[in-house]
Length: 204
Ligand SMILES: CC(C)(COP(=O)(O)OP(=O)(O)OC[C@H]1O[C@@H](n2cnc3c(N)ncnc32)[C@H](O)[C@@H]1OP(=O)(O)O)[C@@H](O)C(=O)NCCC(=O)NCCS
Image (cartoon, rainbow, N blue to C red; front, side, top):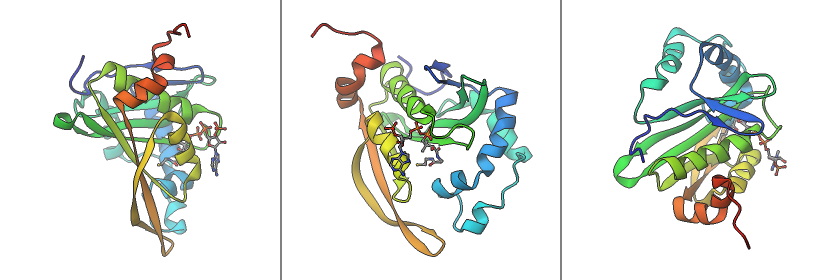
């Protein structure tokens, strides 16, 4: 079992495919990253005005970033592709890897062309399945702002558990926003979701 994140799998679900970024996937990330809701809900900006003013074309450093993701052994970045259209509508990331702790962070963003159709939920499940069955990760954690109940719902359904709150972690439009910290641990997650993850149904 790999002890780093250098393997770059293609993970196939019913509605979503997670794959290493192709040139077309990279092009599609421009409008995704410029989407005001993505910018607001990921805490990338601090005002509604800032959220609305992004260029939908990737700058060269960002393009180069995506082009080099396949070479990174300490993190996993995959395009989230809508199987219905073969279009990249977002991304999933395992980052902040701590090998000694067998721990990392998860984040996901889905642009307007992909949202609210089950793609984010399936992608989250696919990443956790990969993390806990194909790597030695024991802990996958994330943070979600309290202004984002949709994301929290998706994470809870996928098996993330609330661990605490970073109070006043973000200032947006002058308001202080809390960040809820969540994590999934391998044993509990496999006990609850392992059957579905393995695709094997056990007799009851
Ligand atoms: C959060 C995100 C990843 C979810 O992915 P998605 O594909 O849009 O979501 P899905 O269609 O898979 O599932 C949405 C679920 O949230 C529920 N939901 C929608 N709005 C909700 C709300 N306001 N409160 C609670 N639940 C809500 C839906 O009913 C659905 O649940 P169900 O499957 O149990 O019916 C995606 O919307 C996204 O990236 N948004 C913008 C950026 C972002 O928020 N990133 C996460 C930062 S922590």
